[in-house]
Amino acid sequence: MKHGIGRLGRRVKQALTPQRRTTLLLTTPLSVVALGIGFYAQSFSPSTPALDAQVMEALLPASTTGEATEPASQDSRLRAIEARRAQQPPTPAVLPDAPASLVEPAVGRPVPLEVRVALLRQAGQPSFSATGPWWLRNGSGQVLAQGQARSPVDFSAGAGSNDLWLDTTPGEALLVNGQPYSGRLRLLAERGGITPINHLPLEAYIASVVGAEMPTSWSMEALKAQAVAARSYALAHMARPAHKFWHLGDTTRWQAYRGLTTVNGRTTEAAARTSGLILSYQGGIVESLYAANSQITLEAHGHLGASMSQEGAQQLALAGRKYNEILGHYYRGASLARLQIGGAN
Image (cartoon, rainbow, N blue to C red):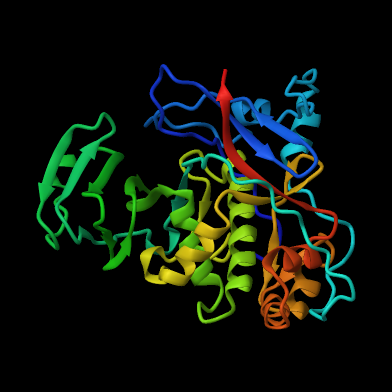
């Protein structure tokens, strides 16, 4: 993961029918923050890399009775959704005398969010295929070319277009230089090459990040702590994008992402058992930094605030600590919040 502050990411959308509008709730043990945003089907139109206005409005605090407060200034709203970190510096991974256990919010209706990840490690002149049939489409969804499993993608029909999409059937994977990815790919022509943008469900992304960032043989409680930290970090970047077409990249400049290569039953379980959980601080999303060990967290993140040692998380898990105790140990002052769909507007 990047040894510093990544940007916040971009808008949060859900593929619902245009007639149906819902309220997304970020629930905490003591308060509710209403993300009063209508979700629409994913569009192909680009957005600017600036802070998304809808998400800014979505993160305005609400009272516990559900009545919205008066809108604050743009600057204060920006501060409300930026990563908030506790002021205490990271501490070594020693067993605390009194576990700082974070209260887990009640389970609600899950929110199927989509994240956009730039496959920067694959950019240039990558090869494309799929484990099943594939379709190459333009930005309007029109099929330009199609092929069978393992056949290379033919770009001749899309020559001259800088907005191409590649998808396959459910349960199959798209192949970029032979590496499998779930979801769909947007293929951006830039600088004489192609940058693939992987659009996939947030929870599928988290399962992959957990496997890329932490040994999957480690304790499930450590993996669950990693899943929450990775989800919180990703959601922060979904509020403000690194680029107008994508939320964050796949390198350690952000957090490591390797597609389906790093997904297995344990990483999927860690993501599923913490589904929707993120770290919150005073109503904002914590851009949860973490690194391999306590020495790196001190050297790289000490001036930024709280940061989790992955090796320390494993040590605490082996000592019997649960994932919420591990998170409470490293992210002092934060709380657990859960994204869920609320009532209709």
